[in-house]
Picture (cartoon, one colour):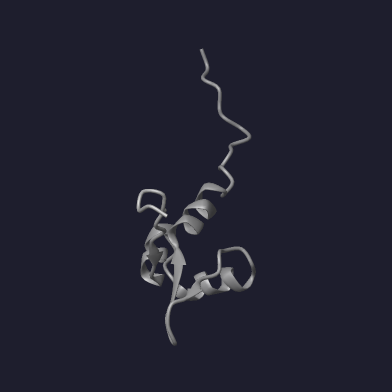
Length: 76
C-alpha cells in the first residue's frame, strides 16, 4: 500500500471534540454518547479515549438544518 493511498484520520481529544461541536461540558458530550446521539470514542490507552475526526465531521454534516416556517414578507 502506498503512502498516497493511505488516508490518515486524525484522532481528537475530548477538548478538541468540545471545541468542534460547541458543547461546553464533558458531561453533555458523554450523555449524548450514552444515548446513542453522538459517535462513541475509541480507546487510545488504558485511561484515554479519542474520536475519529471523520466521524465527528460526519455527525456535524448530518445535523438537521434549521428552517424557519414563517419568514415575514416585506410590505410595499
